[in-house]
Amino acid sequence: MDTQNQHKEYWLNLIIDRLTGTISEDSDLRLQEWIHASDENLRYFKNMEHLWNSMEIVHEGKQYDSDRAFLLFKQRIRIESTINTRKSFTLKKVLSYVAILISFIVLNGLAYQYYIHSSDQNIPQLSEIIVPNGSKTKLILQDGTKVWLNAGSKIQYDSDFGKKNRLLKLSGEAYLEVAKDENCPFIVDAGEVKVKVLGTCFNVRAYKDNEEIKVALLKGAVEMETNNGDMLKLAPKDIAHFNVQTKKAGIYHNTGCPPNCIGWIDNKFIFNGESFEQITKILERTFNVKINIHKETIKKRCFIGDFVNNETIEQIFKVMSSNEKFTYTIKGNIIDVY
Image (cartoon, rainbow, N blue to C red):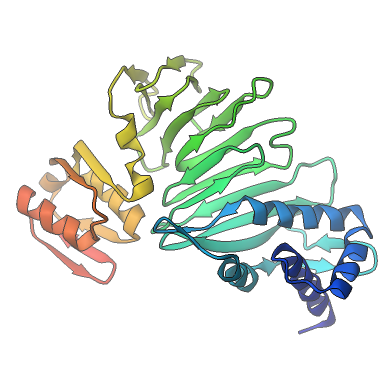
């Protein structure tokens, strides 16, 4: 390991020791001097501190202890930067930005948080949280908003979040319990649509491979604005939908089913007539598998049924195949349907 890498590893270890409360008095003094040696050092430390404080590490309803979280936090950090131990550190530039990759434990997998940092103080720093297939996570944003992210999802927000704005960019699916702030509306940018709220509980499903974006409101009130300029106001139990191909939007009023829309948080699947092709997308993301359907007629079959007891992918396919009369094989993470 070269001298520069040794330096960055040294300061990183001290920061993590501070965050986990294991730092010695002498090391804490050295870290304090380094933090206050430059504004960039201070910003970097604050970013790490915010990340650590905002993470809620979950596995089957149980919270991991901080020691285990710390170990993964430390093992998975990859810094693409050069730290100057005298006054400042500069980050290796990739189009004037750099990403610091941090991984932490989530349900059945890992989620990744990037801090995208610029040496230009006028450019807000960005945070991007990515949840791969087979995983879920929950986090608390700086304003107190709670966010549950489903498999195959990501969010972005900048360093002005909670101060000058509350803009969250979403790709995938998220359930949010938004902290109330009448002076600063919360906006979810899902690409083709934007959802504006002051304080409420709602679910947004906006996967890029889905034909529709859906917003389900559980409590409060939200407005969904499309790129066409259409504005839809939702009441509790309403589901707004936007077809990304036809660009048409509408509302299913008083459906009574928005609570079913967040069953994914507790590993519950509630299908109400979705096609088998739609269901396979959900199962692929949730279980991190690849499902190949070899008969076109199977894709369009609709399924009604609930899986609410943490069923495995094998159990789900056993039930569905008996009802829908198809055969299948499972080899590793590849499922072939005939």
